[in-house]
Length: 149
Image (cartoon, rainbow, N blue to C red):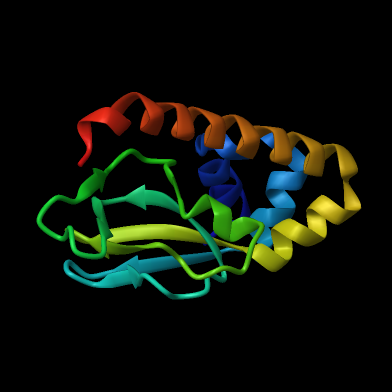
């Protein structure tokens, strides 16, 4: 894969708006294009991530343990899958499975963290982005909390 192709793919992922063009190129250089067949597990609940995947093509299902009959489907090009894997080496809480032929760009945590350490402004923008996304997620959970049970 061409370096410019990978940088373009990263440019489609909203999360990587925290990076400037050169930082995306540096991440693209360290990233790896992956292909998964229909039904393949991209990562399983309990796996410790190497990083995060950017969806290039295909549809993936996010499956909670015990809720395999109610998957959350993702098919948007540029979707960042497992974003927290960029910054923490904690086991994944869900399983990600390919529904059809899927292609992703794996962005290694080590590369992202090295870049964040070299560019404190990038680290600050990434931390703020993650904080905002978590706050929105927790707010959405709060809204449905009374209906769950």
